[in-house]
Image (cartoon, rainbow over the protein chains, first blue to last red):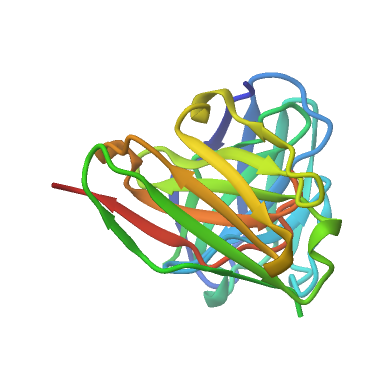
Length: 106
Length: 116
């Protein structure tokens, strides 16, 4: 199965700061998808097909990448963005998730 | 609106089985597969498998073959997952999600605790 490695594992950002989370795949995938999870709630679709924002996601979020390297970027950190973000590949069965990046507000 | 309502928390003894339910509403149940996903602090999110809600056909992640059994009751728009021969490693939050891999909608999660 394809292993997804996220970095960093945890990070803290100040309001207004730019944030980048990366996800590297052990083999090439066609697209990467991202989920946001806040404590005690289910993961929410956040970015799909590498760069498309799910409904309701602020446009300060963006996604990019190809092959084995993908990223999620927040152009300007806001308090509500503090959460754990997971990448997901579904190009190869079984679908696999990254271990998550916990983003905290500094 | 689409909703997936899961059954409540379970406390089970090692060696026993539990059966979790996921009741769908707000859409045509048989138009979408239901997947199941395990979440633990140590292993993160792991894909268990999916069930074709129309035919009952299943596809499991190799890791969960023999551990999880997926079934469906179309009459009540409910999907089920039975976990057997429970060990402490099966303690986790289990989610159902709509679709075989798109996961656009999730249930609220069911906490399973395995302890003697």
